[in-house]
Image (cartoon, rainbow over all chains, first blue to last red):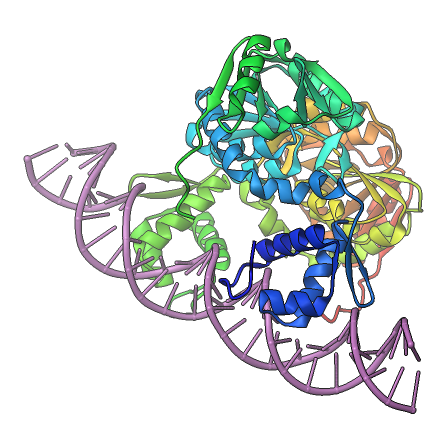
Length: 268
Length: 268
DNA sequence: AGCTTTTAACACTGGACACCGTGATCTATC
DNA sequence: GATAGATCACGGTGTCCAGTGTTAAAAGCT
């Protein structure tokens, strides 16, 4: 991947490319990067500060080095950007299950957020969620009744957790809930963080029908804590990027599998 | 208040002015408003849609009418602009009661919001509230643990209400709660909206000590629903703008009255 | 000290987005 | 069905801010 003389990138893409360079070469100097991307030294330094803040690289006088492996792959914000098309595809398919008048429950995942953006068109609707980002979004939607799930605020996820939250969920009953795990393996859904698990389980238990939203990269990953069996969900939606054999395996283990085709690339 | 030929306002201020007009006249047509504010019909319609979304007015073919009384006063953006100095004075005094380590509960009043702004300096703290504005504010404060009270979202107050909320409150116990009514008369605190009352009562019941925050304009007003006796609060804080005889009366009826002097005007 | 690398401060700019108007189309009401 | 009112769709315009560069000061290294 040669960058020299290429078109000028936005900051996000450039930082991604910088990270790749560092990952590939091990280390590099700020001056070399400035030359490579045709931007000023100052801009490179700002990019590196951002990457360091995200925990991806280490800055030291005279250059930067890569962090020990694995950190890059697990980084959230990068994954979020690259899986956008998949999430939109899944969200579009999920939206088809929602009918006006329903009460739907959404967890604190970015996939659910993508779904939330599409709900305004399906009003009247009741939306229940513990995700502050979704709450702020839906609060501005006319025709949508919003029930927020309170609880202990978690900065990392920007959502509300804990007993207060599970209690609130238990006191409700939604028609449909959408949950997204961080990994799916061997007939089970997993999540890497312990305190998220009870929330998703409670949602599962407080909805008449439940849907699991999974992008295909999660099929090849693992996470520590088991959330539930796939059979516990009435439906599983996965995007079409998954390997055929993975889809076959998945189909065996789910009550109803739904493969969402990628949407035509947006005009954006 | 004459608007004709005045300077062109931003959309927020114009909408506020439109709301005032409607409140004052009872009803009016879109065409009249367009003439009054020197903007196109389309813009007026957009403004009215927004006001309707906020629940302030009702649109019907041929014009708009005001909602039943009291609603306008409840509107957040309206409340926020009034009595700024008084609220700051009260909030400053209230902040003196908060000590690091405490769990404090705040209701969905702009006075409580003013208090919330001062809490970052008192970290570590636990803040409990059902007010979305406060939630968003406190979520960004390092060192403050935030517990959000969920419930049915209310556009008018930008807060969460209903059984879900009162249940959540009942399951907690704070050291200190701050509540602000919309009127205080004859030894009782009142609020003009029925569905707010159970929330404030629940907060009162779930805190070891409770404080009522009142700006002096509320002493001369009345509202329909009784919240609680003033004796039920451990302390009442009022700003110094009240009439001396009103303060004397109040002193008779409260366990502990606190008169907050107005602060020197801020540089902002 | 003398050099290089990094940070700080300030001004500029281009693109995004909010805001508004115009004309066409849709929809209630009589 | 006629008409006034409301909405839709599109394009223009101004504002705001993220992103960037430049210059100067600060901080490390040898």
